[in-house]
Image (cartoon, rainbow, N blue to C red; front, side):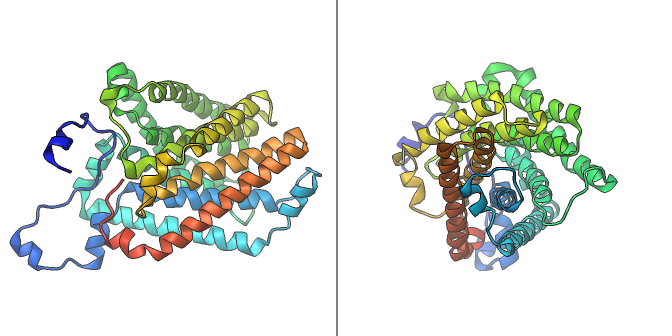
Length: 370
């Protein structure tokens, strides 16, 4: 891009590469960096999109194979899915989460400046919610039974939710104290990950019978979601545009209302009118994005980790459709559920295949988008 076109771009840009690369001297260029060092240079919090997708997909499969009171034929067919496939998927999600978490911890020790820059970045900080959210989803989808009242389950829940609450205070406190101009400048689609983390924690709390704690997390998340949704809906020109390669993050607009409908159904004990309204909103947003393939065409020309932003929202939407179909008990609702599940599974497995074919590009080839 020439200097004239770069000067015409609005500042600050919405999303930039959050990685920090050291300035290379001629001596450094003569030395080829090791594989581990190259991985650390290219690694950032955005890679936890993969964990979110795999852990949510494992939870979807567990929901499908569990016994259900839904007597519809489609539901019974889906419940016959092989449990071995679910166990393999859960194990893959666990290994991926552990490996990426260890890699990020290693980066904290060896490249703390890069981690600090990510924490201070308006986009990068949102992906710090992802490992904690993924861990909660992974525990909920465990192939073994998790006792609701077990002390160790309660301790694990607090260990995973406290970092989410701390990041909430950091992000939402800035929005509150610095005002509308600050929020309109830093708000971006990835900001919804903070809301999703609250809703996932609320659903887990409701499972353990902590209704008041679940309501606290749910109300905090939804209050800030309303502010964020309006801000993103009428974002100002000076807030900048989402770069071409990162446009898949628009699908996070689907994840928040879908997760809210599932979480509220768990808190309330039934998929009531409020849950249905949130599901309808997520379904509308999905159709609005799916009807604009041109928006994502350029971002699909070259593989990027940002592609994984498609999978997690679609999986959560499919989970919401299962609860919706069970509540409505109609043929149309079950066909819609089947279609969304198929789309979610196909997208996830396609991303797994494409990523496995591009591991060198992802970890060693310097793919930059965060």
